[in-house]
Length: 277
Image (cartoon, rainbow, N blue to C red; front, side):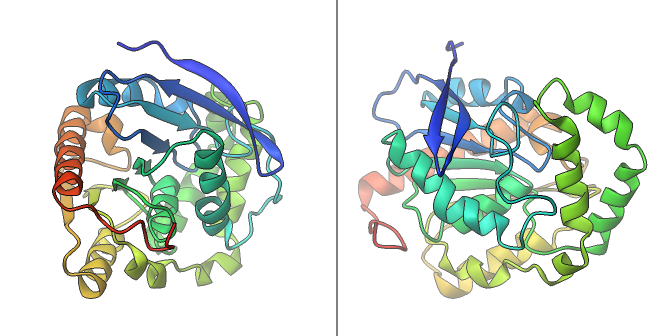
């Protein structure tokens, strides 16, 4: 396995914790990992390293503001309605520019999946995988978070090994997702901007979301850009964390999707991206 290097990168007025893996294929695009609402660099465990080793590509994992060892949240708690948009359109592009990473492949989960789908509308990408993304708040999502909130002390203790400020991480998730304003949060109109190969992975026993999010994403891309390949993988026995619960299936699916997207790009170079970058 490749040895990881950790650094802190000055971006958007703060410092982001970043972990990088070298790849054996120097020509392969970098894989960038976008974590869930309670995630961080270390929360991914060894999944990024295993996936990058299987593909041969370099990897970049980072903790968003307020997570892991990154600078504290700048927006306060609850987060603003556009927090995913701000990450996708400002923070992530600034990080990629600072590290001189061009046309990466995004691997994302939950809130990170929402951010990746939004980023695909503005950042030139080789492709992306979104696991259990959210386009809006469902009753199942809110109810799952309320249930978890009854065990706040347990979650905060568990998160302490991954975050400088575990209570803030948990409260940002809890208070943001259950705030009345977030009943109006909806990213679905942005899905028609996606023009890169997209792999959508959903656990059918997900306790925080139904298949409606991946279905509507798939439908939106196909309506707007029928030439763009969209692949969907439903995992019947998997809950909210496919990369942990069915790791081998997920790794193989992403490996195959990455290879297909790369092959298509080499055969027929795509335009720079939806934003003309």
